[in-house]
Amino acid sequence: DGVIARKLFSQGYSFTYDDLIFHPGHISFAADDVDLRGRVSRRISLRVPLVSSPMDTVTEGTMAAAMAALGGIGFIHYNNRPEEQAAQVVRAKRIRPGFVVDPVVFGPRATIKDLDRLKETRGFSSVCVTEDGRVGSKLLGVVTSRDTDFVPDRSTELSDVMTSDVITVPSKCSREEAEKILIQSKKGRLPVVSSNGELVGLMVRADLKKALAYPARGEPSLGPDGKILVGAAIGTREDDKERLKLLVAAGVNVVILDSSQGDSTFQLNMLNYVKKNYPALDVIAGNVVTVPQARRLIEAGADGLRVGMGSGSICTTQEVCAVGRGQATAVYQTAKFASTYDVPVIADGGIANSGHIVKALALGASSVMMGSFLAGTEETPDEYFMKNGMKLKRYRGMGSLEAMSKGSDTRYFGDKSVLKIAQGVSGAVADKGSVMRLIPYTMQAVRHGFQDLGIKSLKEAAQRLYSDETKMEVRTPAAQKEGGIHDLVSYEKRLF
Ligand code: XMP
Image (cartoon, rainbow, N blue to C red; front, side, top):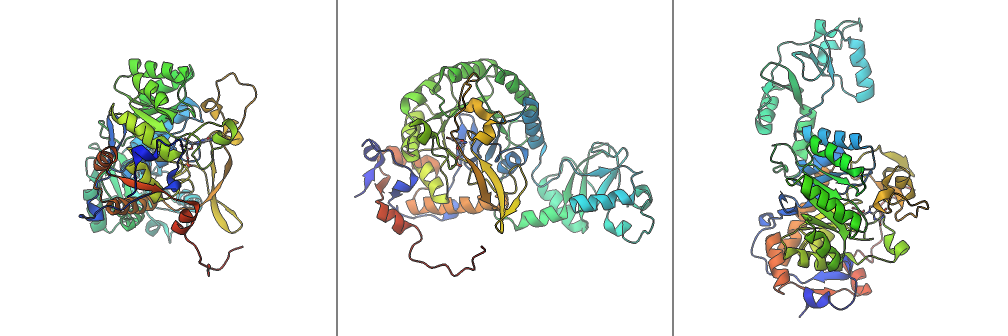
């Protein structure tokens, strides 16, 4: 009854997630007991096996910090100058979940008028006042609207109205302790100060309220430096070596060699270079979809493999170049091979729902990389815009003409190509709110998927898969239709 993966994937078909359906297993534990701990590379484990893609409409510092705060990791894109990318790494690594690390600060000679202007542009008017108006200088006081509401002379200096008697916490204070103190203080802001009384951060009541409303918090992903884990992508050109140097100086924890077809001499050379010059740094190679590709990269020292070719929602590689592989087949075949070397596989692209994540992980992936699933969240770069009554954000393939015109063409060509052929498209996606809400809900759904499979962890998933215990079937087009929503009329008011 049902088919085992070894048989299913050896028939000469290219299957993707939607083609397949697993047979349920026996449930003997709660969904909350499922342990989804995964890995992106040999030495980097994640509590939550989700990874944000190095795309310029998905991952910069804010997304990387949010993914790490959630127990995953983000890879900062490199469609920018090396200094810009390194600055994003620095920014992300400075972030302490729950704290604002670069708060707006004024000096004592600033006026209430300056605060009024801040209210107009940023929407808040409570700030810390420090000796020279910067973070890192001595905290003098805090000004809130209660100090300034009824002061008719708006040119009054902040030193005349600020509250100097401020409750603060030392920089070593844990998030939980600081939250307790902030709640007890009944204040809007809790400054964090160094042993010399310099302002080094802030906890904000409104942020805390929002954070407590988010579902299930857990341990963030931290590196050996005690700071959050941050990844970054680089190319394989000569000047990427300089980029890498800056990224390492910025504290990057792991790098991805970014290419749509990773089985190349360029990538092998770069892999050798990174391994030789930065032995402590894990390097993920790819993208690959076959065993011979995976073998070459692993034998050259790859600490992780990024798997997927043309499966991304904005990808046109399969149509333009006639190469690639259905993502389910690609993940199964490469992960099975890589597992014999203990090299983790990141299933990259094609994730449209939590079921796809369950399938990727149950087919041997150690983590899952997403672009479109995260696009349109608050943490992506860029602003929202309104179109046809909908709140949207841009999302584009790194091989789209739009992204390539900014420099990302090295992912798809060498640096000497004159004619550029797009292998991706650009568009927009609807507002999805914050990843702080999206990811915990998604992961709970994934836990339910594992519970239905009767599998308690990724390790167990791999054991069952490779010992032929996991059973599945191919869904016919009618079965796929049946598995989705059907025969229902929407009664929701149409917006346009
Ligand atoms: P999703 O489905 O999550 O896929 O949006 C994200 C992944 O797609 C890859 N990518 C591209 N592939 N042309 C392609 O063929 C492109 O322009 C392109 N841009 C990104 C990439 O692997 C990413 O993680």
